[in-house]
Image 1 (tube, helix red, strand yellow):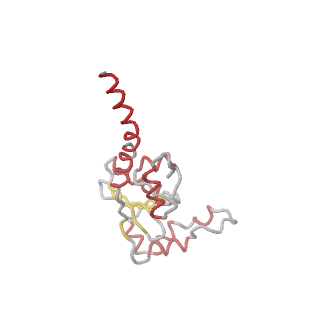
Image 2 (cartoon, one colour):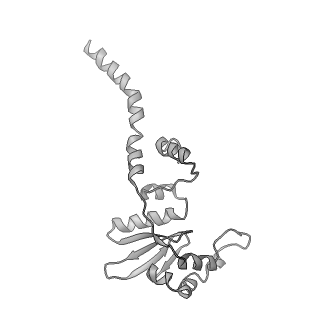
Image 3 (cartoon, rainbow, N blue to C red):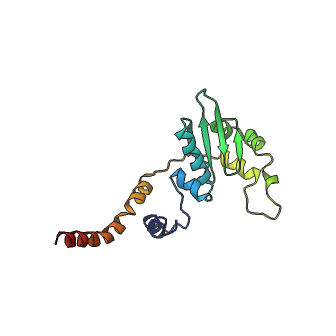
Length: 171
């Protein structure tokens, strides 16, 4: 987070030692346009939720995806980071390696051969089928607080000037 964006979040990054910040506010995610694999998922989840569509973030321990349930009960798994729309529930995919392999069968072809550091189809199959996958909860409270609190310090710097103006006007 750049210092001019929110100095409180920047200080939090510095204190925690994390170099990459994961925005919780989907509008900031979209505004930023880039980020960790969770960022497009966060943006998509909250856009869907805001439009009355049930969606959850799923932590596959090395990747985040979105599980969606529509009003008619139809479930989808969305992977906006890789650009996949899978017309199956996340739990169905976690229980069946072959369905995951089929959904991501063209995955390796989207990368240029010289890009060695990407998740191959086999890596993705392992992510879906490993123990410990869970819904990914993100607390937004501190980030919401930081975007309000960032104005306190500038206001405190301006306050003496405003008080001086008020005193001068009264005299």
